[in-house]
Image (cartoon, rainbow, N blue to C red; front, side, top):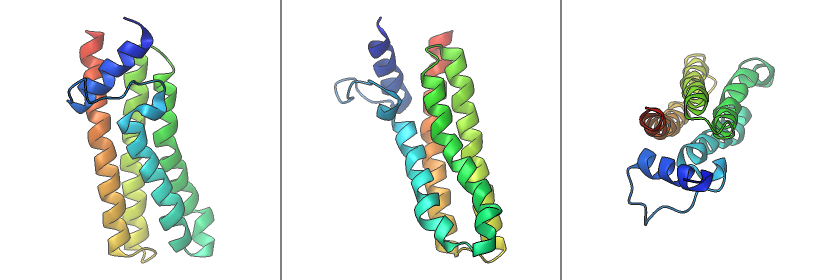
Length: 145
């Protein structure tokens, strides 16, 4: 099985879809879990950062932005390892970073920096990314056995 076939199979199993419905996986950018993490990162950049007070953009803002960036970066790095076990490790780090983003959003809400609606939108984006990351991790675990 070549690497394209391996990654296509990873995506199909991670999303529990029929292989006829899946587009070929040519890069990490084709992974649904990476796309969901990207949505989360863009949400933080476009909606959370501008909502923070100026002094918090360099405190909490820096932390939440780093965590959001870590989600996509770790999926990409794991994909580039071409090793199921290494890939799974990096996807696990990305999942942890999604949870970290949610914690930072809770902090921002608790300290009245963002509205409840932004917290819930961010939480939903993170939970969707986590769901997809979990599916991809489950596939990687099965593939490595």
